[in-house]
Amino acid sequence: MRVWIILCSFLLCTTSVALAVQPSESKQTLVMGNEKEKVYLYATPNEKEDLYTDFHVKIGNQVVETQGWEVSMSETRLPELHIVDLNHDGKKEIVVIITIGTGTWVVMKQAHILQEVETSVGRAYAEMDIDNPVHTIERDFTITATNKMIKVKGRGHEWKAANACGKTYYHHRFPLYQYVNWRVEGNKLMADVGLTITHNCVPAGFLLTYEQKGEIYIAKKIKVNL
Image (cartoon, rainbow, N blue to C red):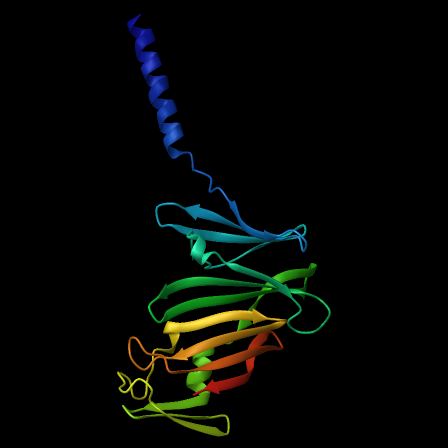
């Protein structure tokens, strides 16, 4: 009897160890989809962090894994899914816009484009590069501000306007990344970047319209709203 008890105890311990080291499988859930176009976004919910991570995009029978996509599980921050022909080649691209931060005078979004390209194993969807709108503005424009005046110069033009805020916390370097609002209008990808002058005043901004150039999407047109 004692031998039987010891044997049962050993088996119980062995089973407990086996269960402890067995890896837990991540469970993907449907975040949103477009039934007509047969495009669906799946992600792994992280209840503790209140985040969707490890996004997979199912396009027809193809599944595309993504890198670095994270979005809050809140309904107010669910991703946007657009299926449009961005490059006018007769084939639709997948545009996913995710919100990574919001607040008073703060909008922080990211845009991702999945496009069918030629690979070594045939045609397949892959994520395209997009020129960062903040880097584009900082590279192509010079911005200065005083308590009375805002000046923007670049791409062969110059703009001047009275500072509607009446003051400024910044003179030459501005936190443009605090207001980056991506959107799709028709078949165009656009980024609205706000020019923050104080913590609660965004009197001006830039509207960038993107077009494909080779393997990257760049801001072909930039409208200065001053």
